[in-house]
Length: 133
Image (cartoon, rainbow, N blue to C red):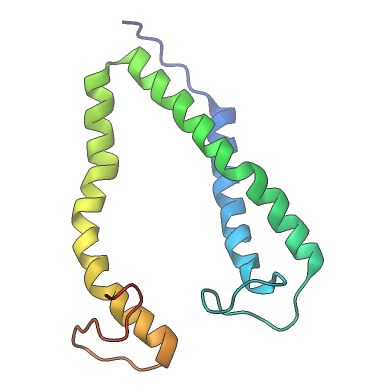
């Protein structure tokens, strides 16, 4: 095993820039012409320049994340081991999912109902919620 601990600051910066552009990407959604208003609240003043910027960011942002994730995963596996990588993923991804899945599962129906009707109740009900069978 190698013990080199060089840090790739440029790649960290690239990941940070892509994350910040994700905020701009999602903030632009209400202003894009033809965006379904059932999912996002929309503004009547649609903007084609905003759509062009949205499409440009959307075209490369997620592929950059996947490439960086593969590079950094390979870096961890090369420097440490597969077991270290698996434990790292379990702690950094699995633990938050295990903690917040029940919380989000209980609160999202309230949020969806409030978004659709403007009514907010402190009891749980699936009636009228999206994806309810």
